[in-house]
Length: 76
Image 1: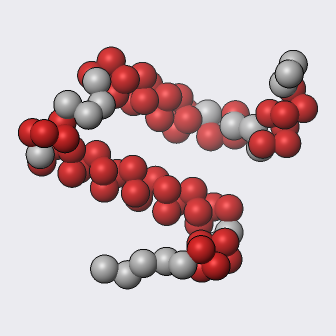
Image 2: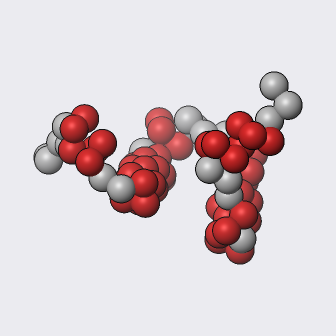
């Protein structure tokens, strides 16, 4: 198994890091489906919410905010 160092991860572009995160999530989802003990880790309602959010993101890819934009809009 190849392991990325912190420096290697930090050298990735923003898009590359997001792609890496997505691959990690997908690998966890596949592992949960294969293991009965892991299948109960994420409640069904939460899986539905995540699926809805992913669909919304796919429909509106430009609707996301950068951290700076989110902070600027925050009332805190």
